Length: 406
Image 1 (cartoon, rainbow, N blue to C red):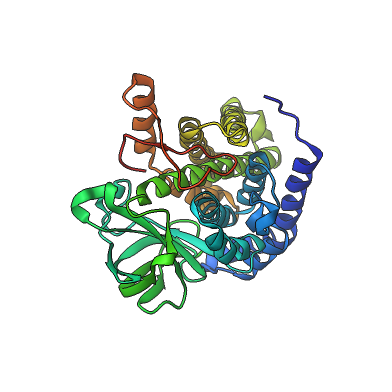
Image 2 (cartoon, rainbow, N blue to C red):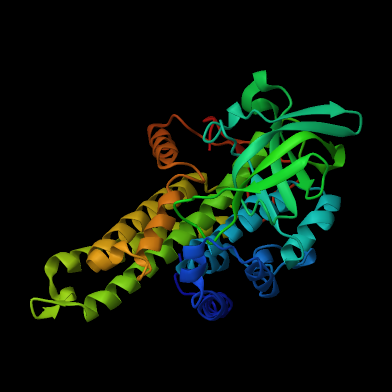
């Protein structure tokens, strides 16, 4: 692996860093404290080309590689997790799925305006009673002529109240579990679709999170992504991309914890010296450094495999699991370094901790990733070739998974 960034990759990193410094950093503590979501940030991200960063230019994107995507997510989450969440759901979980699974007409209709930022997209798999076990989804879809009638609900959906396009999953026959899942694009304004915000979240308070409800919602058959029964395969390919962006973002959050802790440790004095001189504080700082560097290497390994079109489910899972655990530990240590001040929102580290806690749950819980890695090591899990509805996009090689769940 070549660890030297190209001029193009450095430009992406620097551009995103400046955007965060100028447009987000001065306001994020207030937005988070008030639980305010500012949709104008999405418009600015679109103008910068971030919302189509890895999408080919022919569909309105920037056509950049996965290292660039990782660098962007790193810098965005350094500012706040809600920024990286936008990249995860809009780009990783939705747009890249359309690029891989959509027909040409579907790409022109939905992917192009998403890549330019004209339309905002999200992803709906999780339900009130179904999370890691995707085969237990209760939302149903029934074919009725040229339409599907969909009933059910989705929970913990990022950008629920602002998204224009929703990639959702429903079962054609619940007795068939994951084998009957089918994917659909639903547009805002479709009769029978309602959305609502979720309040009282522990973290990512500056982001919009909500729920979706489908009441006899009619969706044209032309909105189906892939074939009937291919929804699980579509969802798992989406999750692979989403996990990658979460891992990359966790690197930025760890870096934010480190920078805040170093700054405070050099300013705060006890027993006549800066607390950075105390070995136990140094130990916490050192763990952030080591963990962050290891997380970066794992994530860039996954990025390199994606750039080469090589299967990377195991590597991406490991990067996501490890990077998110490192970010959570780093945030916890950052609060400890700050002492009592770390327990208040006078300093950003308590926000870092609240934001880091969610990532060990979504995009596959810590426990799911533990089982996945063990199954690979023990030989209980293998990736089998799978026919795709069309040739995969760069960075994709879809294969059937034996382990049900995300």
